[in-house]
Image (cartoon, rainbow, N blue to C red; front, side, top):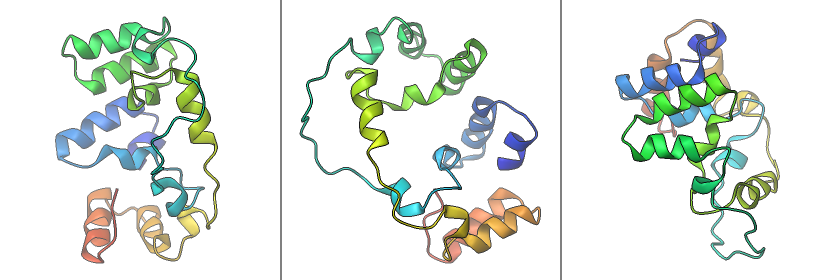
Length: 152
């Protein structure tokens, strides 16, 4: 799938292919330049310290039509393709539609990267080498699962 992205296919098309094949498309959202720990870190604090200003994401004029497309039953991949076509950031669909964009984007930037980049992490480096050697992503995911690691 990373090869499909490298060849220039839109991210939404690759995600559709992953969904079709039963693979977890969230792997495409991980940055190979950041550590696994910083990317899989969950924020356990559900308390909002800042007041949420601005309209909810689903009512934001920039993104309202995309959330309406989802509400009408279009597949998420099709909506992501429409967002890419229009030049909008398709990762917005992964955010909470009940909160404003500003309140959610600021929280994501607060994560501090404490470990080595994912591609240099000793646990996952061999899998990136397998991908670089041209092995299919499915084979690499099977190897990751076989070794008892999280393939997402």
